[in-house]
Image 1 (spheres, rainbow, N blue to C red):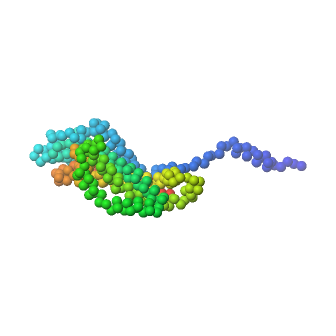
Image 2: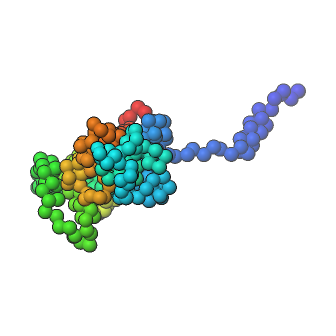
Amino acid sequence: MTAPLHDTSAAETAAVDVAADVPAKAIEGRSPWKIAWVRLKRDKVALAGGVVVLFLILVAVFAPLIVSALGHPPNDFHEDKIDPLFGTPIGSWGGMSSDFLLGVEPVNGRDVFSRLVYGARISLLVAFLAALFAVALGTVFGIIAGYFGGWVDAAISRVMDVLLAFPQLLFIIALVSVLPNSLWGFSGSGVRIGALIVVIGFFGWPYVGRIVRGQTLSLREREYVEAARSLGAGRAYILFKELLPNLVAPITVYTTLMIPTNVLSEAALSFLGAGVKPPTASWGQMLSKAKEYYEADPMFMIAPGVAIFITVLAFNLFGDGVRDALDPKGSR
């Protein structure tokens, strides 16, 4: 009796031994934030906006170094660069040269580039801190209203309705007119900056509060919340350990979209004279002065206008990309 050509049992054993020697490829789990980052990297427009935002932040942080290397002190006068007869910069394009990259201001000859760089500090400082203040208030009140419901929800919702209908611009102008020159250790423009941050943030939190409230209403009935409640978890634990982590995504998205709005608010208030006090540099203040000289020196208006446009556009593009990346139902 002849042996079979192929020993099946031996072949199977050899295959198992070979498979055991080859290490299995581990399946890597991805968190929602990692998935969002992968999706954000595919959005080139949003990444470009993020790069511009990062560049603007670096410019604001390192403004003294940039000005010392490429410009002049923002409050120094250079009257020799001004035509004594018309009060306009000598030369074309607002007096632009290798020494004054964006020209000089009419009448006093201050360096436009330096004031533009320092103006970025004011705009971004007010925008970021006002957004953080609004997000903090809106998150706390929104999550409380959505979770507790009943009369608590009704009371907080009515307060939000009143603040949304309140004339914010007129209130800030009236408030600034009665502010003292020194308050709580701050003086001059420091008082104005603090007032802008508090007022813009205070009137901005109802927008965040409405979004957080709506999300909390849908999350409070989820299984994991019911499970935590059945295990005896307290209200504070459920609010800040179970609900709040699931609200980070919408809060992040709205924060990125709120910052450019705050930039425009600060510029508008400075344009109307309710912003920082001169000689502190501000984009809105530069636009306010430029309206008197736009025919003779249009560059003085173009420079701060373009700065505001680029800043707001970059934040909006980045915010839209973050929103799409964090949307689980999105197609991108």
